[in-house]
Length: 386
Ligand SMILES: [Zn+2]
Image (cartoon, rainbow, N blue to C red; front, side, top):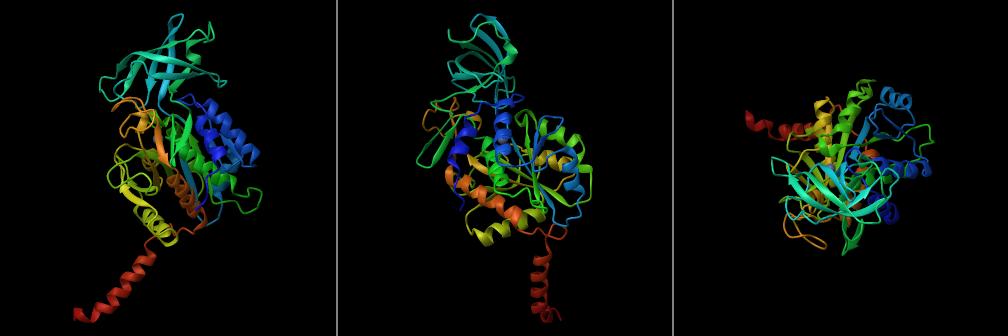
């Protein structure tokens, strides 16, 4: 099993992010990719496309005659949080909440406010107002302390629920203000850093590090609308990498879940079968398999744009910072809490996505080997039909 690069993982998960406010995490990721010699560019939507140095380089991957399908990984860079709206007094910032959230014990929660330069100041959430559907916050007011810079634009500030540290580890569990989905982004970055991008034969993948997933896959939709993936004839498929709330049969520490579907859709059956067999032959019993219908993911957006799609989820505790499982720094049930993942699940995700790019994919006929077995059974039994 590959080991995690703790320094890179902890650095990434420490960067503040929120829907539409991915500027700090993007700057961080671009620096890591640049230092590692990984090509990338930014699309018009502001997503980072890893594995091609420009739009035309991306199109040449899609138009290449390489029969091996292009794998298109997707993970998102945002996480539920607040956006500043206006100052209602010298030390009170009214905010809107974007994405899922805890539903109770929100009054008095610590919010870390950040600006585009990555400067952070702690504040206290007051007057939380739930959305009419009751499942998430809609608005609130963040009270800031005397150290907060004076006379700044309210819209410059975004924020997230803050705990004792941005990330820490206890007994093999990684606790963070944001596992969803910087864990997926981390796995993609590590995969990209392991490749030699200078060789004439390119690694058979690109990756979309997307924006604003938490408010309805906005970044991914933007990318699909830009039309690149309608270009060229090279076979291609999407692999969504997420962290998703644990469910019965999708347990923490038992490996990443090959996600058969989400709340909206089931995913590509043939490719899922190939993936499942590939994992079982190399890492028997190390993964899980299930429909993860606790939420929907960017795989559903890709499907709607006609792309064949498979998906992985790392089991996630305290989904969207809601105290569902409790643990260190957690408020009582449904209050603010750090998200958490198991270290070994992230290591296995790393191993599984390496298999995706190193194993030949029989995409045009994923059932060929199964048909061979079926025919064999038929031949063995055929005489009894007479
Ligand atoms: Zn997510």
